[in-house]
Amino acid sequence: MKPLRKVLIANRGEIAVRIARTLRDMGIASVAVYSEADRDALHVAAADEAFPIGPAPAVESYLNVERLLTVARKAGCDALHPGYGFLSESPELADACAHAQLEFIGPPAAAMRRMGLKVEAREAMRDAGVPIIPGGPAGDLEDARRSASAIGYPVLLKPSAGGGGKGMRRVHSEAELPEALERAKSEARSAFGNDAVYMEKLLDGARHVEVQLLGDRHGNVVHLYERDCSLQRRHQKIVEETPCLALAPERVDEIGRIAVRGAQAIGYWSAGTMEFLLAPTGELYFLEMNTRLQVEHPITEACTGVDLVEEMVRIACGEPLRLSAPPPRSGHAIECRIYAEDPEQGFLPSPGRIDKLVLPAGPGVRNDEGARAGQLIPADYDPLVAKLIVHGRDRGQALRRALRALSEYRITGIATNVHFLRRVLAHEAFVEDRHDTRFLDENLADVLGSPATPSAAQLAALAALKHHASQTSALRPSGASAAATSPWVLAHRRSSWSR
Picture 1 (cartoon, rainbow, N blue to C red):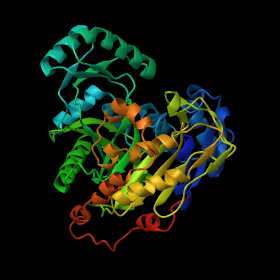
Picture 2: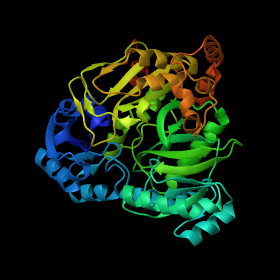
Picture 3: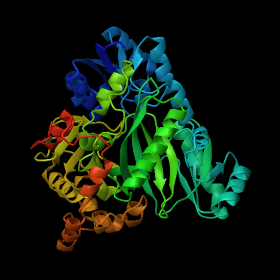
Picture 4: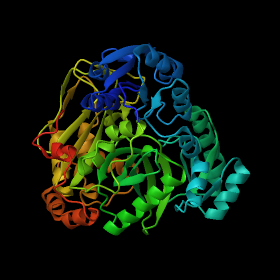
């Protein structure tokens, strides 16, 4: 086991800031990189050192492996953390780090390769006994027709080489198939440089449930429970929460065991997430594996007290997991993604300079911000400005805190989705936990026209959502003590989490 001295953060925005903060807590120096568009960005100031990486286009900066490794050598780094997005799931970056004698703070390249190609990932999970959605090949129109005939309409065409909702096409009949396949292949080629697509049975009314995993280099894997990521717009997550109230405690144990089995089957280590669809009839189906840190990881941290970035660093150093079983879980957490976009204009990105930024605070509130007042939000990258994470003793308190915190946000100079998020959280379908992955796409006009505060009836329904305190004890591993609380849990329960 070799301790790390200095880590290059090969990313930008809020995740680069968040990684730098944990590295500082661990006594490890951090090195940021920045494009010409990010010279005044918060992540540059958050790190101990910062180096220019190239022009604004990501392909010339944050996606340029050679430039990243040049900075790592120049700065004397002994490790690299990829964050999420950009090159975070690139086995080529992991291989390049190994060749440059840099520790890659992430999973092995072989596991990334296997799970990065969705058809191969499905086969690997099927062989491991993980339930998969009925599907088949869609390499050409004849393949697609045969697969659709076998599994039945409606179906979903998905890119084999990528994710994030790009290139997906819903197909409800054979008449729609030729055009949908052509468009899916074109979008996949444009987004991922690979036009390979495959087909899955379309499960309407499903919930999107994922399991947080940690594995070490000694074959140990543990899960840190599930997250409900069903609130999406065009397959992009907007709000996430944990626990998932649609799963009984015994189902949480079941999905956790399944995810651990799948990760062990591919020799996985580091942080990773196994994503599932929960059908309205109760069946669980493997969706994909994200071989990186997830955007929504803070809600798991809020309920378990585990700093996932710290654990990734320790695993990269060769340390065995400090957990032999899932840790105790407490309360309920919700994350809202704050985007520089205008919901009233079709969610168009809203680049520009932030004139004023006041972040919410108070009990149970954490801000993972990636920008500050005076900073330019460029048009070149994902418009995520910050993440709001709230924690409460149950879902009702967490939801009330989220609504209160969103009302305290003050951002001028750019348009944001803050007011839209308030409308989403106040909508009766979300308050009553009746939403699925299609809720926003099918009810967007209703949400945009709904009030940004719950009605008295909705508040009464919210108060009735007790979120099983009994479930907390049911989820605590045998022998674990509620008193054995980590500093992160204590930090999340203090009067203010605002960083």
